[in-house]
Image 1 (spheres, helix red, strand yellow):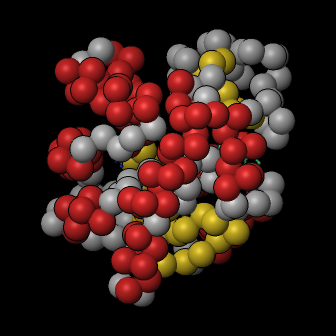
Image 2 (cartoon, rainbow, N blue to C red; image 1 turned 30 degrees about the horizontal axis):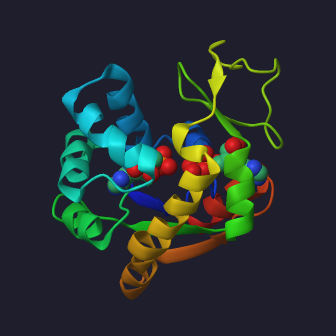
Image 3 (cartoon, helix red, strand yellow; image 1 turned 90 degrees about the vertical axis):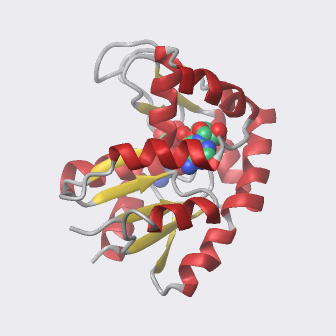
Length: 206
Ligand code: ADP
Ligand code: AMP
């Protein structure tokens, strides 16, 4: 099994593609955003530390993230990293405990990112991701999977989305050249419907 990184701006559709890749190809899904939101919900010391960074749209410090990821990675299973690494320092840290075989970059313009995030809703109970426009739940405001109430993420408010995009361009976009230099980057256009994006990503992983 190979280790794969899903890279791309916030709202490009990483989580959406990841959940299908995990179902169909059996990866271990490591989403640092989901892990941090769980810590926040449980009110752990780590969650309390992370919450301020997250609501401002800033990155949580590299050492905190690397400790979190290292605990989760299982050498026996291919891992799908989603939303990690987000800095070159994180990428270097990751290389110290496992290899990365393929990096898929989901490319999407800023306007479409903003559109997708303003209409994103997540289940407050299980974290499932919906979109009021492109992927609404069957019953308005209720999660199809567990019946939980759908909420707007704190960091999907317009002013925070703008900040997250800036942070992506400053801190995470350099990872494109970093992985290109290692010859493992594959680019995928992320603007089509989810099924199309999934097919293109699955193709890139062959
Ligand atoms: P990321 O994990 O990259 O932040 P998400 O997977 O949460 O992105 O997707 C952001 C929003 O866009 C969600 O509301 C999701 O339902 C929606 N979405 C994801 N992929 C697509 C797509 N291909 N077309 C339209 N909407 C999408
Ligand atoms: P995401 O769910 O991937 O959009 O992440 C939500 C928020 O969690 C980000 O805006 C950051 O504040 C934090 N976060 C998630 N992953 C990382 C990471 N790899 N490095 C630093 N901060 C992260």
